[in-house]
Amino acid sequence: SLAVFGSTNMDLVATVPTAPALGETVTGREFRTVPGGKGANQAVAAARAGSAVHMIGAVGEDEFAARLRATLGEAGVSTDGLRTAPGFHSGTAHITVDGKGANSIIVIPGANGTLKGIGAGDEDRIAHSDALLLQLETPMEGVVAAALAAHARGVRTVLTPAPTQPLPPELLAATDLLVPNEHEAADLSGRADPYEAAVALLDLVPEVVVTLGARGSVYAARGAEPLTVPAFPVRAVDTTAAGDTFVGALCTAYAEGRPMPEAMAWASAASALAVQRPGASSSMPERAEITAYAEQ
Ligand code: ADP
Image (cartoon, rainbow, N blue to C red; front, side, top):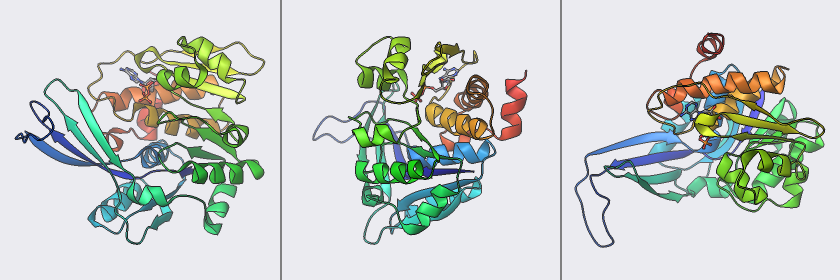
């Protein structure tokens, strides 16, 4: 089973022909609300891929909370570790998408900002898991506390270093697998080439998987030659949460004892299926579908 420590957000998406300038009002085309947050997305991806998943996070005291809980629950994620932060709003992302597909985003952490540590129940959730999945959309001190709790109990930690920020040494010391996309890998390593970045990051953590969008992913581990796993050639219509789908499926396969290159190929199949459909967590594939696609 897996534990996920991280964010839960409601994305509020406005589609407009042209984004408003400061002080201007425009009439938009469409509005939709989409449950998201990297933590919740990874939890849903892993559950759909077949893992038993415990989500550790926080929602607010607002009308979004019930839907955020329901989205996790419908995917089969346990929400016992999802607390309600009194007096807070649920995390929101206010997204404006213009006619050319370019977006601007305001993120308000709300309840996610209260995740500054872990509770006693969370220690048990983590201790009984095969791996703990972490991202950086919640306060760093809470991420560090969760990582240390896992590391102390020999539970594998998998860190998605997004959004990019400096990683404290105590977090790196407690990270077993780092899964940046190519931009995050470049930021963290100072190297533009993803292969060089993956190898350079081995100075910080024992294993690295760098995702390269349609160009696949690169695996590097100490004492082994780096290797590349191709993406599936597909027509992508919505790449939102491609990386979260990949991580959820990757950890599911890896926790089952499958070797990393095989786990990466299976995760590539999961994300290839997801990018061919619109939506974030709603587009994530189920286990049987992933396996059938991976073996085609
Ligand atoms: P992120 O969403 O974090 O930026 P990536 O864009 O690197 O992550 O995508 C993660 C993985 O999803 C890739 O390694 C690849 O397997 C798959 N993927 C992403 N975009 C595509 C695409 N256009 N076609 C096929 N697979 C894709």
